[in-house]
Amino acid sequence: MLALGVVACLAGCEFISYKPKGTSPLAPLQLTADSAELEIVFIRSGAGDREMADLWSTIDEQAIPSSLRTELAANGLRAGIISGQTPAPLAHKMAGAADRAPPAAAAARLEIEPAVHRNHMQIHRGRPGNIIASGVYDSVSPLTRDQGEVKADTYHNAQADFVVSVDPQPDRRVAISLVPELKYGAARQQYVVEDGVWRLDTGKPKKTFDKLKLEATLAPDQMLVVTSLPERPGSLGYYFFTESKTGHLEQKLLVIRLTETKSSDLFVHVNEAGADVEH
Image 1 (spheres, rainbow, N blue to C red):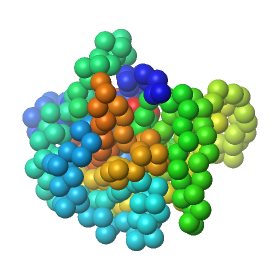
Image 2: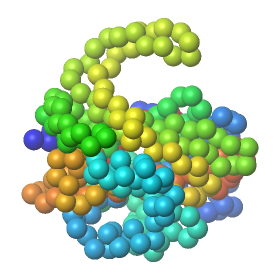
Image 3: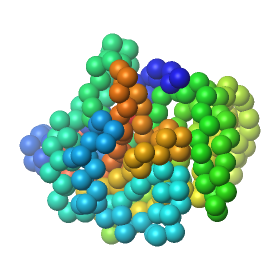
């Protein structure tokens, strides 16, 4: 049974007004040379929705190396790149996306949350962020495939997320990596190394799926799109990208758009914060 997760954005989220250049007196956020801003959009639709399925005819899946596409598909995942004009169905949904509600309002919106959520996050090179992809499952046993071997390890009190890292390039493009992981069990204290220094960290154990690491180099306004393959119940992708709402199965689509680098002023900001995002 999927426990109801907190749908509010964590304190580290950033709420941004989506406005064309030149329409506001507010100055663009000044990024540092080692950082980039990403727009994170989750779109929910009914499982098997024809419009969202047809969207993949406009997404460049060949931009993902064939060996990685094979690994992703074996684990119920699908990914590609959108360049140029945003496909009309996706543009329409994203135009109506609401920014995350403040935490105080989140509980009242659990059952009426919109089908599209948008967040923004600023990431620095060497300081990954997290995109939370699911609520908290009481117990999951995702079927994973690695070199033809099928596994079904069980994780209790588990939540799916992606670890996102950036490496800004001199030409305003940004190399992005996305690694799926499951955090599970009870929080515990452990020593970790950060910037060559040991420190005490409190967090849950995690299972990181490094062989499914997605890497893409995006120019401003290009998008990395990730979802699950349909009809793959029990797969890793299923637990990341499907959920049950009022008895109906819904599928989620994750869109990551590069919106700003140091030299870009494409977006205007209302508020600034850190780098954790929930769907």
